[in-house]
Image 1 (cartoon, rainbow, N blue to C red):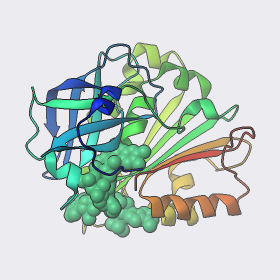
Image 2: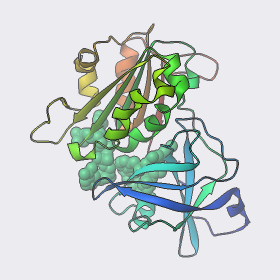
Image 3: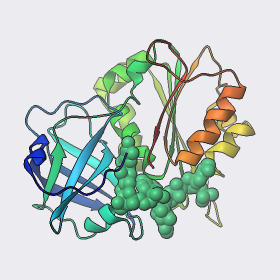
Image 4: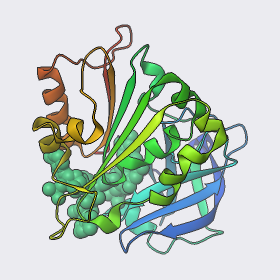
Length: 266
Ligand SMILES: Cc1cc2nc3c(=O)[nH]c(=O)nc-3n(C[C@H](O)[C@H](O)[C@H](O)COP(=O)(O)OP(=O)(O)OC[C@H]3O[C@@H](n4cnc5c(N)ncnc54)[C@H](O)[C@@H]3O)c2cc1C
Ligand SMILES: NC(=O)c1ccc[n+]([C@@H]2O[C@H](COP(=O)([O-])OP(=O)(O)OC[C@H]3O[C@@H](n4cnc5c(N)ncnc54)[C@H](OP(=O)(O)O)[C@@H]3O)[C@@H](O)[C@H]2O)c1
């Protein structure tokens, strides 16, 4: 998905130059930032934008999930600083007012529109794979479409459990609450020596395989009821897909409805 650097040419017109409006640092490696929204920019929660930064004589492009709500007048993203990463290193000292190229189109198929039925929406995220679910969970139609919304966020250490306040506040937004769904937030850490009360310990794959996630949510994962979205580490997605396959769940295809959709970050 990541593209090679590009000389700034007329093809840059596929994007508009937006401005960073705010930067929030969660940890020394994790941060969110907001930009102005390109005129007429449309996206469906779960999709990603392609952002560009000028590096010397080149423009670097990378994909970033949009975390803001579809009706927000800005766009927001949640990133990790990859050590030595060409693009993310460029954003180390990002500040309000900085320029950011934003491609005019949004991309991606990890949206809830892909599910034609189902009662329980499971959202499984590692690290910054949380991002698209922040947008999806601010969509009132999702709270109407499903009876249960279960967000599972797995990180190395508890300080990386970002967006907790926003997530906890969602059931109190009248436009979401009216949909009637119940939101459950399941947090897991893998490298904490002492696990905070209420958090799970272990990788999503292990917690799914041994039944911990279903027990914690009080819900079974089944072909009939469960619809599952997975985002983040590609190895987590490959292994989880295999576990779901063993239980009879299938990916959504263009013409064949299924039970899960995925977004690999690399
Ligand atoms: C569809 C899509 C959506 C994406 N959305 C996001 C997002 O919302 N937030 C975000 O931080 N990144 C996201 N990414 C990854 C992003 O595009 C970049 O790859 C990332 O910012 C690192 O870029 P880089 O040039 O610094 O390093 P790269 O050279 O691109 O990556 C170096 C290595 O870093 C690791 N890596 C890259 N991204 C991540 C990540 N997010 N978490 C953990 N390890 C990673 C991988 O091992 C990768 O091989 C997304 C990627 C895709 C394909
Ligand atoms: N997060 C940090 O504090 C930190 C520190 C130094 C460098 N980095 C670098 O930053 C980048 C992103 O790190 P990240 O922690 O956000 O993302 P990550 O490495 O994908 O880890 C996020 C979560 O996914 C889990 N995970 C990893 N592989 C998995 C698999 N195959 N199956 C199931 N779960 C899996 C991890 O568990 P495990 O802990 O068991 O792997 C962790 O809980 C990486 O390039 C990393 O080297 C991050």
